[in-house]
Image (cartoon, rainbow, N blue to C red):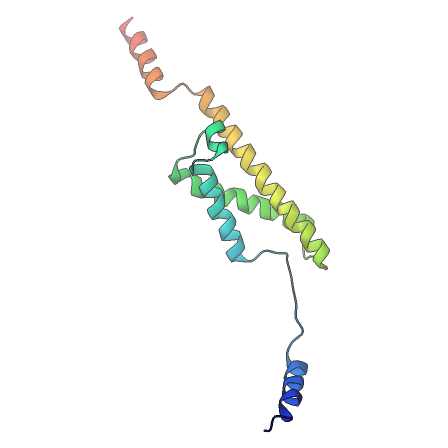
Amino acid sequence: MGPDDLPKAAAAGAEEAAPFSFSIWPPTQRTRDAVVRRLVDTLAGDTLLCKRYGAVPAADAEPAARAIEAEAFDAAAVTGGAAASVEEGIEALQLYSKEVSRRLLDFVKSRSAAAKAEPPAEEALAVKEETSEA
């Protein structure tokens, strides 16, 4: 094969190659796993959300993050389904992102409200001891 044959070979290879396909929705499992990791970091880390609503113990953060992501994905999949165009895929991805954020905030708010409703363990013991002495 001479130098003049290279462009012909490259053109023939390009014709045989599958056309480029780009799909933004649904996100890959790798992307979904990254979302879960970020949620765990947000729930259990030193974030503004934790300062305001309280941090989630690491043992509870992972299952909560997986549930939040799965629910958000399911909600977006119902609306986004099999996106026929890139624009529809972008809309589905935006909905997924909003659902993750909304569900994360709902989770920390409900957890914070539940924690405020329960007396701390030390106070509960003190109250229990006072009533048993009486």
